[in-house]
Image (cartoon, rainbow, N blue to C red; front, side, top):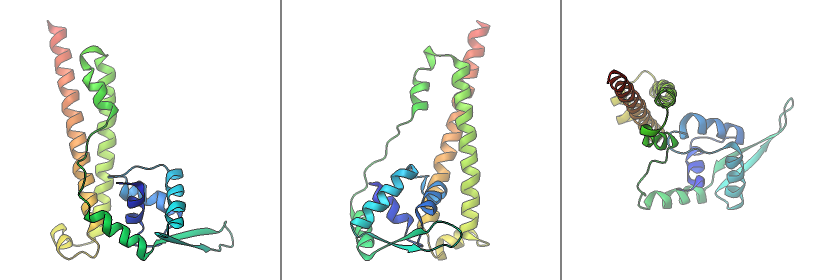
Length: 189
């Protein structure tokens, strides 16, 4: 998947400025695609040059003018084409796993501290996803929303992000516990 597809998908619901797009990425898209703000601005420029989004300038009296972007018919066709392609399998590329791979040869307390930090980060994301899901479905139950919700795509990707962070938190907590137990057992021997 290219960044362009993630940007096009983020612009499906409404016109967004580059700044608003970076916020949308932080909240909703970041669970499946990470991009720096400068990457997003550059991609918006390319998408506009390719005719996949259109931008319009909004004059603001007390602030600098801003550009709002929306997906064009060509952009929607690009997403349709992208959706029809076979999905590539995902893979894990995580520096924390490299650190754990070296667990037998590095300071256990430092490694446990890194695992604890990651677990806390995952919990914060779990809390965020919970709030986002609640916001999307309103006063409906999840099952009602899944059957009758207006825009189901963002909800489903948010559910995947929630499951991903639950897995991260649980693995970090278990791994830290194993390392603590092993350290205590070695100290007793």
